[in-house]
Length: 213
Image 1 (cartoon, rainbow, N blue to C red):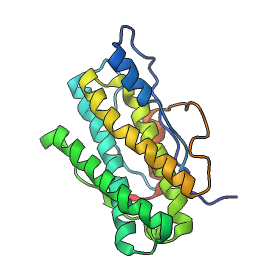
Image 2 (cartoon, one colour; image 1 turned 90 degrees about the vertical axis):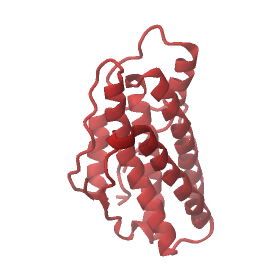
Image 3 (tube, one colour; image 1 turned 45 degrees about the vertical axis):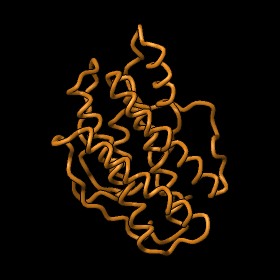
Image 4 (cartoon, rainbow, N blue to C red; image 1 turned 135 degrees about the horizontal axis):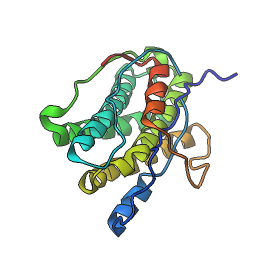
């Protein structure tokens, strides 16, 4: 049995709204792109995401939900880079992706302003120094991140959806890149089935990476 982290993907429990504009349709298509699974064990509270008509208040909750996940990714890659235990393609990957994830955090904090949640206390153990543990953990984090955005796409207002789309397309590239490094098919499926925010919450809990939030 594999001891890879097992992170699951998120999905929305609402159908797409009728009457979406072509731009919204394209953006929602971008936000319906990759997904997978990750493991660990600790209870951590991501922001609760309500399922109701898109509104600025709901946007704030969803973006804070995304910010929590981006904090985890940014911390994961920053620590892996600082430890200098990875080599070759993995080091190339970390060197680039750590900057992207920090930029995602900064972007979401700027959008949220004073409403942005604080960075959680994180503990990645040796997942940031052991290549055999780093690679599956990175795959799980990236695919879960894409799935998280996918699952909330229909719950965002048009303007916020456009902002989220600029991030999720890059996350999908990260997922394909690390899968290729691991010798896996970068794009195994034509589509992915999103799941709920509660499922992503459970997946993050199982990683054990977040010690307080």
